[in-house]
Length: 106
Image (cartoon, rainbow, N blue to C red; front, side, top):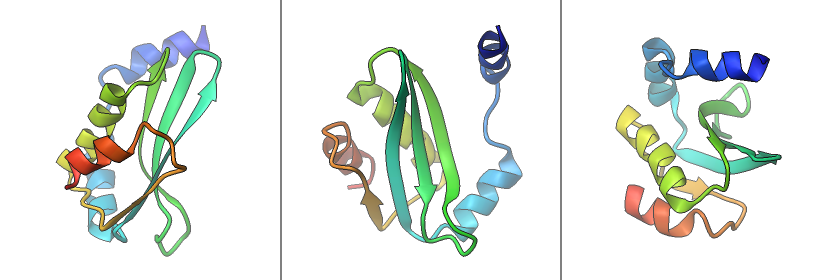
């Protein structure tokens, strides 16, 4: 039930404009992306490991079901649209990322 409430609330939510502006302004240029699985849910995460106060959340996306490249591309595309332009992208070697990263940030 709580998960349903969170999903219903999150439908219209985006990262706060002030937070997004702060993240973009203070972005180190290094972006780490990864995914965490729990049952049929996957949390896509993007963090800035070069932030002065330690790993800083840049963005996230909750995906239900199998994660495919289109979901990863949409997630990273939203980061690009927000102004995140990394000089370096770090992944765990998952096949989900190389082609998508090359398209989003050539």
